[in-house]
Length: 143
Image 1 (cartoon, rainbow, N blue to C red):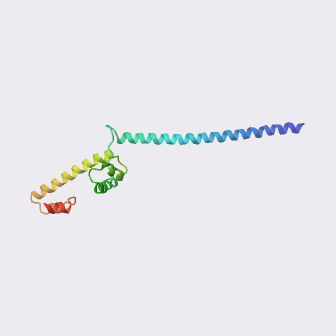
Image 2 (cartoon, one colour; image 1 turned 90 degrees about the vertical axis):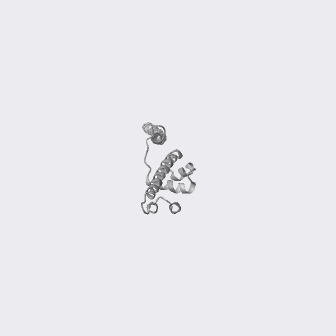
Image 3 (cartoon, helix red, strand yellow; image 1 turned 180 degrees about the vertical axis):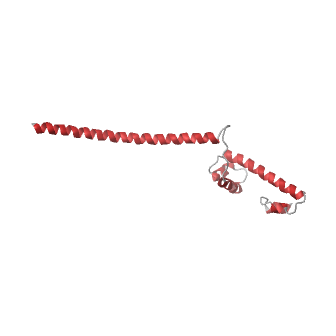
């Protein structure tokens, strides 16, 4: 009779251990799911912070890197000055609106540089056009 009670207690302990293992496994799965959800939410928060910095009327203007600038120039030569969405796909890190704003500044800078070369050439500075590296050889020789 003593063995039966002893084994009955052991069987109950085994069942309790099995139930606790199942509960533990279930809780680990829920914890893992919760951690994944937290990661997704943190990514969304980070994206919204970055969007707040680069969009809207109070946007923080981040300077263009040399890589972005060179990609812009390459894409400008490929797509032309009107296809800002195409250029933005090549630049990759800027929206088409940011590319459009940069293009406006870029063309204004080019215009200013061209005017300074033309002014220097009119004032008699020898070789002003040939020393201006940003002036294409076609344009420099046609003046």
